[in-house]
Image 1: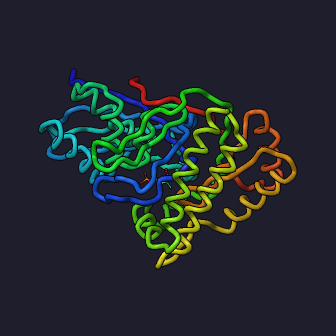
Image 2 (image 1 turned 180 degrees about the horizontal axis):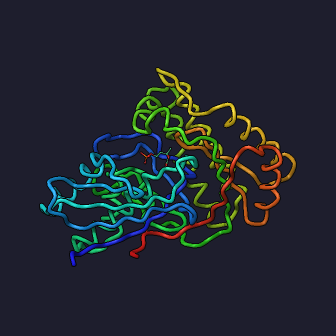
Length: 318
Ligand code: PMV
């Protein structure tokens, strides 16, 4: 039987965002970022050699455009020596509606699987570097729990590592608002955001927030983590609005849920928001509060689906 390797990686949500590239071709970011890997959403990917003329991608049982995946596999060919075409079979358990970057779990799982197939040393740093080139946020999904992607300055210095490998009882409630494709790709969005006159301030502030966030995690201070994450995320979206060609990922519902969450906080609930490159809102709370908060959310937004996620594990072979 032809050799095949299967790996699973979970998606992650950034608490300190990656939103800008210092080097577009290599995905070297303007800021270091920090994320929580989530248990609920993951991708399982199997790779095997094939004698077909092209790399092939089967995603959720459907043969899919493999251009991006094939370009990524070519990076392996350049770095580790040529090999035959690859059949990639991937199952994505990241609902598009959740607005979570399935590219993070996808490229992380594919990287792990390729390391196995090519029998490369399973060095997490090297895996993170390769995953980063598939999609920046994928560099962090190699790791479970909290990961920090240190921005570095070149290809070999820009990679993530596990920062804190314990479940601190943080809960992420994901409001599934929209399953539409992103209005604007993250690459394009970042490029525009970087033209905002306040962008350099956001970058500088992010470095300070990262250190405070690390401190909050070690102290297991979810209120502090949530407050900083919310400030960092809203700041990221503010850059989009201040860009030379302004744009906004938020919809009316995004604003409504943000307002609602802020109101809950005023009423004494532990509740903060974070939002990525789309309209969907993720609410940060803790295990002790999640049930009550979820009830309130269901009451106020009966038409919206909410998913509850906790800390997830890093890359695994299955
Ligand atoms: O990895 P990309 O290119 O999909 O960019 C991810 C950007 C954000 O999700 C908005 C932030 C982050 O750090 O994950």
